[in-house]
Image 1 (tube, rainbow, N blue to C red):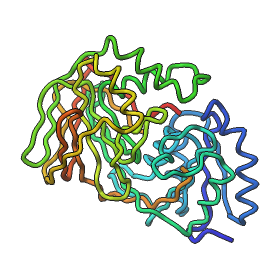
Image 2 (cartoon, rainbow, N blue to C red):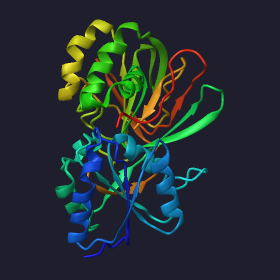
Image 3 (cartoon, rainbow, N blue to C red):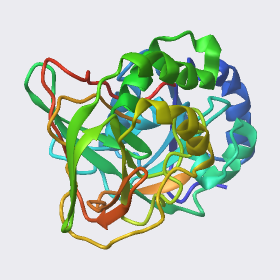
Amino acid sequence: MSSPFGELTVIVNPHAGKRHVGQEIPELERNLQARGLEYRLVRTEGRGDAARFAREALEGGSRFLVAVGGDGTVNEVVNGMFDGDGAVIGEDPVLGVVAAGSGCDFIRTFGLPGDASRACLHLAGDNTYPLDVGKVTYTTVSGGRDVRYFANVAEAGLFAAVAARAERMSPRLGGSRYFFGFWATLPRFKLATVRVEADRKTYEGPAFGVVVANAQYNGGGMKISPRSYPGDGILDVIVFKGPKSDAFTMIPKVYRGEHVPLATLPGKSPVKPWKKPSSCSGDSSLIARICTSCDSAKASSSGTDCLHGPHQVAQKNSRRGWETSSGSPR
């Protein structure tokens, strides 16, 4: 049984999941071979390799990419699918994701298995799913402009700083790095002034962070955006306003997905987290056609109301204030 999309380019991050993904490679290959799927397997050695492998594969005529690893690996592969002008490389590429025990949050939205054996059942290519991709344009610390893409969740402010802190923690902590990183970062984190616009409704005021979600989960199982649907052309934008004391009651609600308001309002205007220099991070056995027509969003201000409308996210950074990071802990 061969894939209708041709040979699979399997991009493996063997260091993901406390190196558990590397241990899963033999099982992954056995299952691919048992299903008669033609594939070429490449291993990443460092940051940027997955994006480079994805780009080279698509430029070489391949169509079907499979990211094997955590959310950071998925994020790199997705970014490698776009050229410098923001166009998808190749014609109608297909993305598959195998978590292989990495703790990938992206697969949680779809209820897909986390082990390589069962994940391979979803790589035959007979059941694809449209997947939106978000685009973030921002100013770098050096003052230049850059663009990143994400399929799962992008964050600015507190949650991005937490992701950066968690990435520096010991891999032995696994998915709990984000939990410990949150409580280590929160006490000294400062409020920023943000402006979020959607249609005729605006929030301008203090905020600890802004989350832009295409899928539902991040941060090691937090159900950060429970109503996100990755193929509906809608991104959810959640503004966390504080105060810090709310964190003790808010975090348990976030894990359960009970922290967002229920009201929605249709709209068509841009959504722009703005004003203060900001941290930003952006990012599963799933086969998903990559879709780039996703300039739409719902925006919610945690504890208040919800806005809904097409969007582009603009983020302003400088040398001071919130730091900039990309990707998620793997």
